[in-house]
Image (cartoon, rainbow, N blue to C red; front, side, top):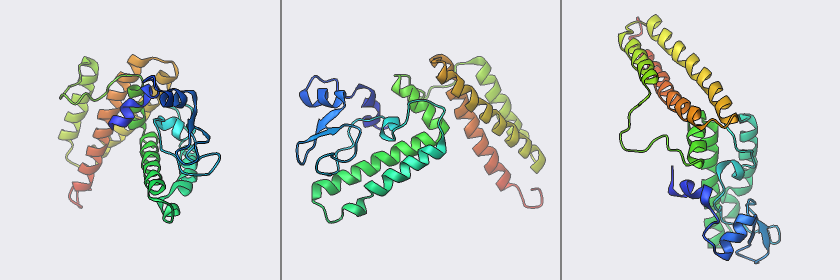
Length: 225
């Protein structure tokens, strides 16, 4: 996660007039100085592209913050905004507006890629709450039950030597991942951060196992597959 994303939850709290205005939902357009909603990519007065600001990914796409999302709606909103903000549309504009369109497009892509992926979406939601899933310090699973499940499933994959056994591991891990995503939706909806954190860790290793089992299946000799 980028530094900008980590700072999103605290945006607009430095006490400056600009930050206060942004936090209240209205900023001054850099081009005409007219009032512009902070969440809007274009000035309501002159139509100039605005800086992407410190919106979180949900607000950037006009969505309610939460794990349970309609991915078709996420895609609809993303592509609608992408058409309006694509840098090619601003090729004849001034250098600042061209640069801002690039920034807007990058921020929009980051929001889309994060929210469309359940694991990244869960990690992002936790980060917005100040809870780190990946600390980057080589942390290991400290939940005995979770650790045992991970070890058993990895052993099953290591022992799988034919197509049927590899497929069995893949199917089991895929079903477990889907169940975990449903449990995550319930945990986030209930505001249970501890459960959401634990389930996000579980989904992380299950997703990795699904990926590894799929690759293992592809690497089997054709006559074994």
